[in-house]
Length: 81
Image 1: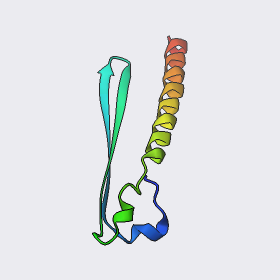
Image 2: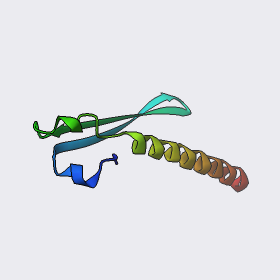
Image 3: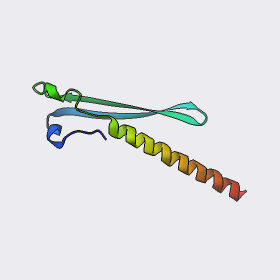
Image 4: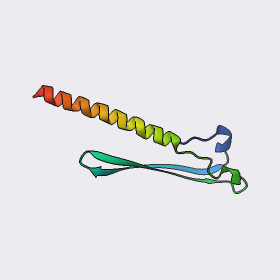
């Protein structure tokens, strides 16, 4: 989930995306994202071509999803009692 021009992809030897969710407390977490890549030595203009912006957007949406479902789970538990 990184942003690259399709024409650039053939020049990359490796693209690795890592997401790590780190628990910060009983009700909070941190999402750490890393993008590693290798490209043809003959293409120095590709250095910095990969963007983590799509990862950041996905993290924002994930937080929204978790918060929405956490609220629903609490409401369901409360009603079930």
